[in-house]
Amino acid sequence: MAWFDRLRSGLSKTRSAILGEATPVGDAPGDAPGAAPGAAPARRARDWEMDWDDLEFALIGADVGARIAAEVVREARKERERGTSFRDALEQALLDQLEGDRLRQKLRRVGFDLDVTRKMVEPAGKVLMVVGVNGVGKTTTIAKLGRYWSGHGKQVVFCAGDTFRAAGSEQLAVWGERLGIPTVTGESGSDTAALAFDAAQRRIARGADLLIVDTAGRLHTKHNLMEELKKVKRVIGKADPGEPKEVWLVLDAVTGQNGLEQAKRFNEAVGVTGVIVTKLDGTGKGGILLPIARELGLPIRFVGVGEQADDLQPYDAAAYVRALLDAPAAA
Image: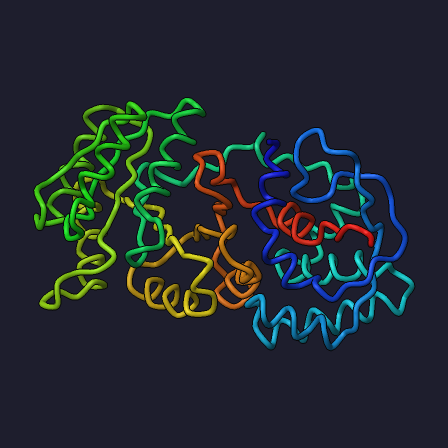
């Protein structure tokens, strides 16, 4: 399945949540979203109409947030009154929230022919620290990142620093063995900061391109998670001055607006430089990307739209909006 088809399929629940009340206007041949390979061509709506109040409520339900939803509807209505089709008006309003006029104008000039798989997402520096609460898929996401960069010719090292979660360190070690990526591990309950220090030194000794450091998402009650993460970041800097230049936060899309509070706390503690949003395929709350980009001002680096390794995709605002608004099949 092509990357855009996977993205479109992964956003199907969010698309249904937003466009469930849409009325198709006109149709054109095309494969319906999620159609089985080889299925007869369906009819896809060229455009649709929708009550503005219904749209605003739907956007709020998709976790866009009340303020942003109102702004999207207001701007889309203005475009619609100028004669723009409903779909194009909504697309432009969403893109303005995510990227502003620059990307919108680019789309108008060249059309939708962007292929995010052709440009590698490359973190700054040599050490990437990955943070997030337990259950968001952090360790699995690190494994997918390692596979992604290894596939682009990068020499990667893992640090299995989630030593406070049962079998957390072992989980990443198993992934490392499968992928052929060296993994620095420690015993359960061992000091994550000391392990990260050792891993940073080993990356330098190996001459590897990138060290990805896993971290705990929850500590025993006598520890403070944020203070421990600050310590890990400081210690990495002692082993490898200037690092880590990147701290990426993994958020579970299913948590929706609750993820924004998580992001604020992690950002205050360790200075988050990027966000990965996982499990978009499992929720109708995929609109959470808008407040992440708009309210937090944090760049979204990757999105997860499935369980397979290839389902962790570099984020592209134009592709996200186009997949989100893939028109419903005409009745």
